[in-house]
Amino acid sequence: MTQQTNLSLFNNIRIVLVNTSHPGNIGAAARAMKNMGLSRLTLVDPVDYPSLEAISRSVGAVDLLDDAEVVKDLKQAISGCVWVAGTSARLRTIEWPILEPGECVQQSLEHIGQGDIAIVFGRENSGLTNEEMEMCNALLHIPTNPDFSSLNVAAAVQIVCYEYRLAMAGNRIKKHKGKKHRYDALADSTQLDGMYTHLHDALDYLGFFGTNNPDIVMRRLKGLFNRAATTQRELSIIRGICSAIQDKKRPRKQ
Image (cartoon, rainbow, N blue to C red; front, side, top):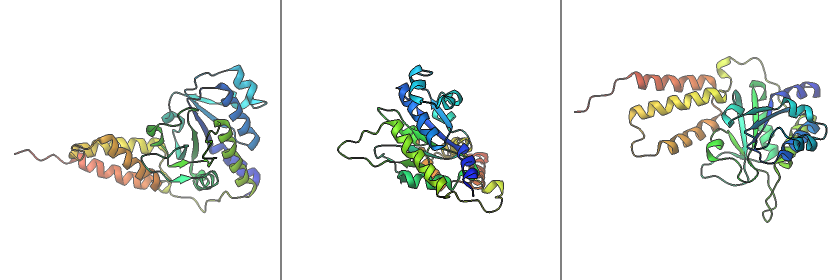
C-alpha cells in the first residue's frame, strides 16, 4: 500500500478525549494529531470548550477543533467503532489485554479496514472509569518513570499519533485479502451494546444471577466478548440463543 492510501485509512481513526478539564490540553492534542496526519478528534463532555485557550494551544490546528465532534458520553463517541482502546495509568480489577503504544497501534490496524477504531484518553486527574473501560477491547498503557508517573494527556496523544505515523511510514498497515462476508466483519460497539442488553435480559429470565451482582457478571462477560473480537456472525448466534431462552416458557413453581 502507498503512503497516500495509508493516510486515507487514518480517517478511520478517532482520537477521543473524555471530560477534559483544561482547554489547553484539547488544543495541544489537536496540534499533536495534525503533526502526525490524524484529523478526527472527538470530545466527550469537555469542561471548558469552545475556548480561546484551546485555539491558542492548537498552533495552526484550528481546523481540527472546528471539525471536532462534541458528544455527551463515551457510548456516543465510539458508536460504530469495531475496535476501541482505553488509556490507563493504573491496573484495573478486571483484566483487559494490556498493550504498549506500538502494540496497540499494530493491533488496531489489523481491524482498520473493517470500520472505525478509537483510542480513548481519560480525565487529567482520574482517567477513565471502570464503566468506560468496559466499552474497550484493550487497555493502552504508556510506560513512564515509576517515581514520577504524571504524563500529560496531550503528550500521551502525541506518543500514540507518532506510533501511527511510524506504522504508515513503515507500510505496516496490512491490506485485507479479498472481500469478507458481512457477517465475518467485526461487530461494532452499537451492535455489541444491544447484544449485552439482550444477554442480560436472557440470563435474568433464567434466574442465572441469583444472589450474584448482575453488574459484576456482565462486566466480566463484556470483557470476554471484547477480548474475543466478536464478529457479526458470532453476535447473531448469541442473540439467537438469547431469543430461544426468552421464548421458552418458565416452568411453573410447584
